[in-house]
Length: 102
Image 1 (cartoon, rainbow, N blue to C red):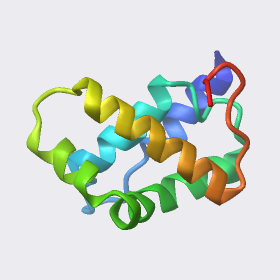
Image 2 (cartoon, helix red, strand yellow):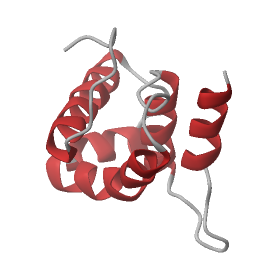
Image 3 (cartoon, rainbow, N blue to C red):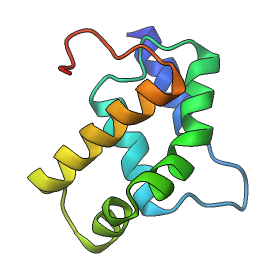
């Protein structure tokens, strides 16, 4: 439980006067809700936090647009988020959590 709390705190930290866009918050909350970040080291979580947005924009800008346009997390968006997370973990050399499929 403590590790999950640490993951939540470290991921949702914002720089003062630099609000995080909704789509980026959705990426972070999805990863937290799916328990993708709990077993990462603090350094790995920081890498995730700093790099996932740019990765999402470069790899799947239509997913980002879809998140911005929708008012709910549709099954298509969930599939897109899962695929994006798997791609990011693989490209960043992070270990995909046990029990998360793929």
